[in-house]
Each structure stands twice: as C-alpha cells, then as structure tokens.
Image (cartoon, rainbow, N blue to C red):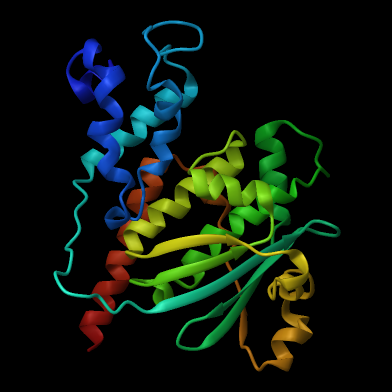
Length: 273
C-alpha cells in the first residue's frame, strides 16, 4: 500500500521510485532524502516485487517509504538565491570515549570558538536496554554518532544557515552519517535526527575523517569541563543536554517537536528586536 501511494502502480516502482524521490537527496534540501534512499538503491534493479531479497516489505523498506511520506507531508521547500551566496563556514570536531563512564564533547570554530561536553551514561544505558544487551556494554560508535545531532542542537544558533566541515574519528559512525543509514538502531536514529536538523537549520554538512591524534575534541570528550587543551586556547565550554527522549520518540513526532521549538525561538528573537 505505501509504495503504491507514492508512485501509482506496481509496474513503475522499480524504474521510477528513486527518480521520483531523488530530489530529496539534493544539496538544496540538505540531503534529507539520504535517510530513505539506501533501501531503494539496493533494490533498484530487482525484477520481482515480493521475493525474499527483492521488494518484500521488510522493516528497512517500510521505514524508507514511511520517511518519504513524512517528508512529502511536510511540504518542504527552499528559497535558492540567484547570485553567489556568501554563507558562513563553520568547522566542528566531535568525539566520544567509552574507556570509563561514556562521555563526549565538541570543539567548534564559527565566528567565535566554543566547546561543549556531556556525559553519555544515560544514553548508553538506554541503547543497551533497547538492544537487550548487557547493562555495562559500551558501543563507542553509538556515542560517536550521537554526538553529531547533540552538537547540532546545542550549537544551533551558530550553525544555522552555514556550511559545515565536520570532523569525525570513528569510521563506523562516519560511514553511517555519509550514507544516511545504519543497521544499528541507535546510530540510525542519530543519523535521522542529524539530517532532519540539517533541513530545519538550513545548514549543509561535509563529513570528513580525522585520526584520533589530530582530533582536537579528544581532550574535551575525556576531561569534560577540565579539558586543558580548551583552557590553553581560551575556548569557552558548556555542558550539553543529553536528550534521551530523541531515541524513544517516533521520528514524525520528534520532527514536530524540534520544528515547534525552533519556530518559538525565532519568534522570541523577532519580538525582542
């Protein structure tokens, strides 16, 4: 039922579905469509509608169709400048550690330098509960991936409308962020929230790998408020929200919550002028 509502008939799904929905992956829309494209790319040239490895409505494919319908229901749009757009450039590095109690942090260079840190034990416990894993297990890639949307939200006022170079030193997390999906549910949700925020904040992120020794957010992810590197460079730091509700709230409802808060903040800013 879901795919037929999208494209009209079973016959055209194989050849046209990616083409019809491909505009969502364009840079003008902050590539939000990446969240839905991976299952479609895997099946684009499959001939059978209901085979075990074809167009059977698996959980991944159902999630893809559901997200496409969500985007369409939002009537997303963008105003594109005709001339050259002088967008501000922001550099962000994020990191997380699980050697002791899980924690993470970021260092950002925008108009001014800033940093943030948070303890991730609450999130790690939640992810273990959701995945039915041992309570003390730490999957560092989950923490590394979660630091991206948490940082986006913490620094939303500085990042809004910017082009961002984002440095990550964890390969599984980086791969998930680049392709727009993950087989790990906690990471998949983090990636989804990342791209929703990119759209809502009208920012474009280029993710890049950086080795751990060169990651200047390594210190704050471990030492938190006691990071000597940030202190030596006079970088102000603040504690970040952990926001476990992001991983328990369905994405459509979460999108509405984030949109409402951003709209309220924008209204308050306009009222105070």
